[in-house]
Amino acid sequence: MSMYAFSEREALELLERHQTPFFAYRLERARERFIELRSLLPPRVELAYAVKANPGLPLLKLFSSLGSSFDCASAGELKALQEAGGCSSLILFAGPGKSEADLQAALAAGARIQVDGIEDVERLDRLLAEEGRDEPLAVNLRVHPASGIEEGSRIIGGSGPSAFGVDEENIARFLLELAPFTRVRIAGLQVFASSNERNADSLLSNHRKALDIGRQLTEAFGLALEYIDLGGGLGIPYADTEAPLNVQALAEGLAVVLEANPWFNGRLVLEPGRWLAGPCGVYLSKVLRTKNSRGSDFAILEGGINHLLRPLLTGQPFPCAAPGLRGARRDYILAGPLCTSLDRIGLAHAPQLKAGDALMFGQAGAYGRTEAMSDFLSHPRPAEYWL
Ligand SMILES: Cc1ncc(COP(=O)(O)O)c(C=O)c1O
Picture 1 (cartoon, rainbow, N blue to C red):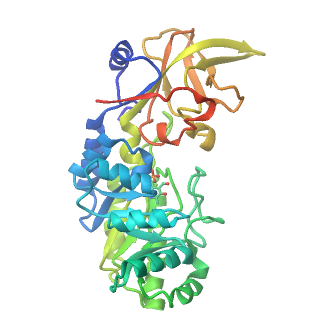
Picture 2: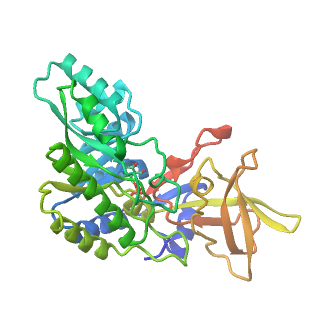
Picture 3: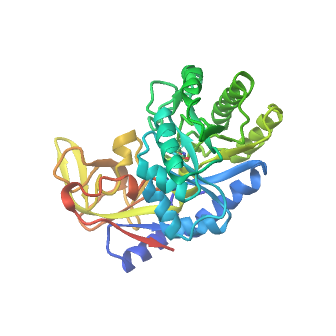
């Protein structure tokens, strides 16, 4: 599958119709990817789209119509999901710090809350007491693994120190602290510490580790788990040299993981964001000026980290093409229009560029517009077109 949701000809048509800079999304691609993944996964795996990757309403409506569950991580994401018509399946609610307002919104939405620490439990217990609920609320516990989960991309953080969840070695202490809060019961587990992983074996070894923690919760602490949530993390290529994730191998491996853990009779949850949404979007921006500075070629674009921040955060540029341009290629440093030398959005190996030429960034359907510093320097936000 091409890293660009639109061909060169389609990109040129888009550029004729719309003023840059803008994002364009091909919903059909998102549909195909959801259906492909759903059809490969064992039925006991719940597929929950991670809204943070791209909370665009057309995308939420599409996934909802396909029967998706959703992972939300703020009251705003829950609101977006409601605006998109809601969800008839499972809504999960995560986040390393949850305010009372967040938790109230999650309770109102009927979401399955993933508690990250005793403070979540205290706040929930208080809210449930105010509501006069008698039945304890079933929640999932997010556990941060002590070892064995690494990641290359600095997004979730591997097994090092982390703001997420309860550290694995502190589970017993957490469960003791939980005892007085009788309105909350742990009936599920979430373990997610590695993102943008394109190697199915690495993902599966993380998932086996999650099941090991689940077994520990069940055998040592007597908890019956309805869900084990494995988070997201399914990676996509950002460069021609990177191979795509073998989702069939991942799906088959998950079936083996379930077979190897007969003690667990609940459902596994996968929360992919990037894998589903990334490949359906592109970002198009024109060159405002070019410059050679002390031997380096720069192209300064209409949009920078106010539209695409991910490359600066992760060191992973989005793939970049120059639709309609031909000729010998050279390397450009891509800068944005912001008044800061932080404003770099990647590199291009492109034919000679001049003011007015457009560049197209692929795989920008996830962690594009919503991961950017939209307000920095007060430039207009980019438009979004859903096709
Ligand atoms: C709890 C949770 N679930 C799912 C995701 C989605 O991850 P990805 O886009 O890597 O699939 C994230 C991303 O940060 C997350 O924090």
